[in-house]
Length: 223
Image (cartoon, rainbow, N blue to C red):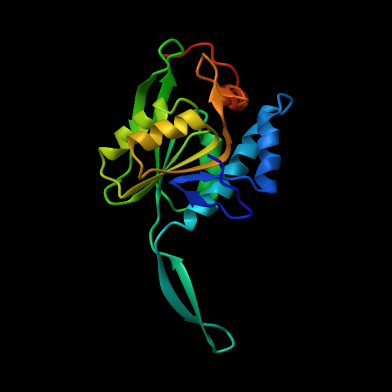
């Protein structure tokens, strides 16, 4: 699925595909093997900010008026709800930091999930959640590959009875998107780039490599 975008993110069949020039530059940067950890994290943060601005357009607003210094009255539609942000450790942290710039007062939850490279299934090691009942949730993770980890995360989040779940990811694979939408078509996905396929190890092709390692260095011990 390819949904063209010019400076605003469109949502079609519950999936957003961002392909404006600003995001294109940032995607190039995170794909580039020569990008160091500092610039990789910074690019992810900026991607998170861009995509969060588009989620902002989805949220409920209320009309507010005020009297300006000229004595005239101005009317504005302001955000009427603050979403809860949930990120998956560790690769989701820089992306989530960008989302926080758009929603600085949002509460933040964390999930520690590690993918078993043999089974490609996620193991959950840590859950810390604010109150999610009847609230909008933005779930961030840098990579959406097979969709298994995100589906597991969504299942955990749903136990807390949110109103709506949005997924923000820098690099998504079409098979992973399809899996999430089969699981729950109401999920809205915002991605900086969508790649067509996965290899036999479940890595996104062409992808960008292991986001956690590129942000923070290679793992030597995972428990």
